[in-house]
Image 1 (tube, rainbow, N blue to C red):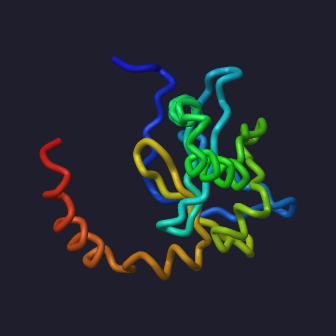
Image 2 (cartoon, rainbow, N blue to C red; image 1 turned 135 degrees about the vertical axis):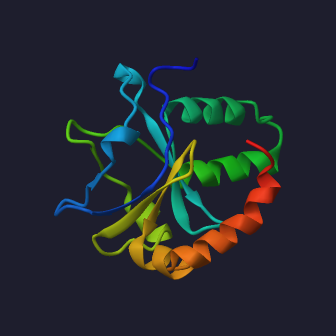
Length: 156
């Protein structure tokens, strides 16, 4: 019934980056699989945040990228641009990560406050300010928006 290391990313966590700019990943989100704990962080241009792919999803993503035809100049250029903004990382013994300055700049993360948001198979990292301004504040507003979207997901 699936891998014992399978992580489902749910919830919203508000954290501060430490004095060295490191961010703590929630312990229940950390894959514990020896040398296989390399995550992939990519800019999410539609949301303006950073999307983090866990090891299993990062491996699948890299496999798909390796299938891009070398003769397809447009796709190779897009791949080169994306890889220049991407970052692979592992967390340290305390579960902290450091993100590259260009990813932080892309996501508008200037201060210490960040929001980590679970997206089931991935998680995203937002500047607190950008997240708070893009998400309805009240539970009632969020629930109403969710109700209108759930029908599109079908039956679970």
